[in-house]
Image 1 (spheres, helix red, strand yellow):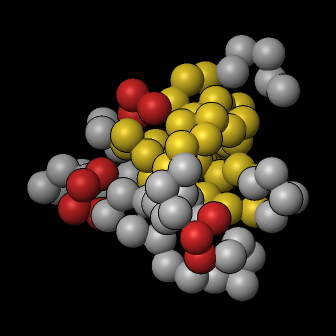
Image 2 (image 1 turned 120 degrees about the horizontal axis):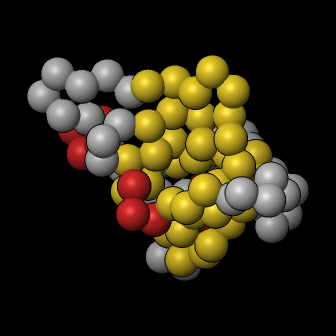
Image 3 (image 1 turned 90 degrees about the vertical axis):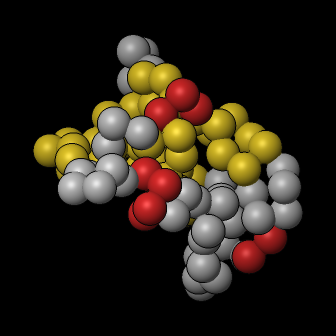
Length: 92
């Protein structure tokens, strides 16, 4: 679950998977040499589900770490299930 930060107010912050959810027994996340554009579904702490444009910065077999800017221009990030993410071929 996400933790409060000085970036995004707590209820609007993305809910993130816990390490035990996105990592296998011995699996370490793979860091992207260069983040690449994705479209991802996130769920906020308040329970709102939003589809956002962002960048994949790391991944495991189960999940992707997505960095994005919320609708108020604040940076946020979250680990989400791999099925919630698609690559954006257009790069926007």
